[in-house]
Length: 252
Image (cartoon, rainbow, N blue to C red):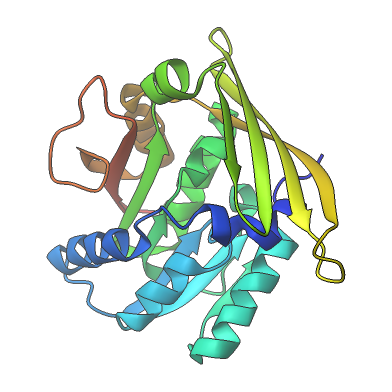
């Protein structure tokens, strides 16, 4: 079952608790530390373009890559409203192709965890290294083992809004380190407000340790720079739920 199809139309509604503006300021601050004030920046797993738009506002020439046509349709609607010159590409991050190199690559909202095979994630990192300018910067976040095991594992999360609601069942397989999300959506019909349509999707994410992420970064040719507890400058803890990583191009 393809992920982010029916969910795409209500994705932004349920993600309104994500501090995109705060994260965008953090990313901008890190990029400036490495002398990247403007120029081409790629976002992998850009979804509906919320972060892509914010970074475009900060002066970057943005490219967004995502493998969901439905999500990109919403991103392009935002582009029409903002007038930003953003290039969106319908591609899988495991085999994305660009016309040239970029100054930086970013990936937020645990998009990296959707790559559930380590060799495939190493290939993602290898492609990033290939398309980065010399000494270009790669910034991404990922959900931790602790979050899947202690926070999400075998939990049911439900949320109800006026126009939509969802039930989100989590199953964490400790041996495979795979978290399975069974997502049931009830979306209000635009034709009849008393009618709600039911959709189901299944998503899978892989739990990676920081040690394993470091190893895959180095095997890909990138240079590991630093890791922080979420979008801070604090060192990761064993209870960190999200870790933000900085890596750098280190020769093709």
